[in-house]
Image 1 (cartoon, one colour):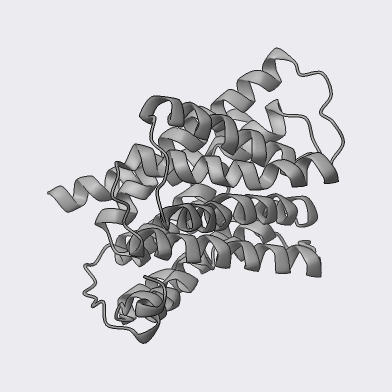
Image 2: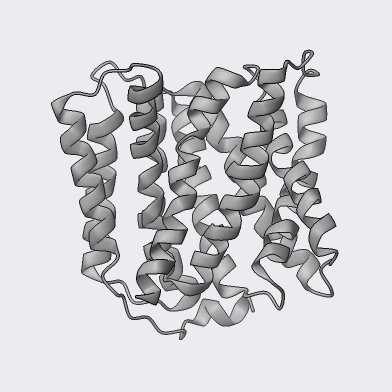
Length: 293
């Protein structure tokens, strides 16, 4: 029962992230990927820091900035880059490779066993997302493909290292540290590489507040909680719920079409998530694991 509750609470995060596309396209100014990512991370991180009033100590400064870069700065930047260069379906399919990446990274860094059911679930999920989001006219921009793949690799490494580097603080504090570090790293890039934002409307401000407070602060507390209690491959597979939610919201809110093939694809994705929850045994005996303690 406790494990099921852990899975459900963790699944809330990617389900909410699935609304990010709708919020970004309908409520935020277009063409500011670095600025949007920075404003999603930094204010939320600083707000949480005001609540917890605790800073990293010793070697945790370096670890926090590495995790902040992997989970937020690099991942969100490349996620937006892929989204701008690729059709949504292609970007979602490329990003869906992340659970497969996590399986092999967890093997190298944590010594986790590679179980056939986990690989099958990951491959099934990728196929389901492709069927759900791809169209016959999908364009393949090489830079966008690379951005999507490297972004998935970044988030995969961040997921595994967040499990490996269990902090001596609360999950709220751990989330505050990472969001703040990720936002700080994005700040100079946004300032130097993008023009200033236009005057923000009330709708823009509401969109930024949603992405920061709900789409970052609350969801990442749940996400990092799941990482601390569940196997990395189980947690990452829950990310398949994001494109499912995005397509569902597009149908409900934007009156986008939802055909038989997409309904079948949703069933395939949900089946892959269910398969991934089969308990996977793992051991912490790996040569690389000792190098990053």
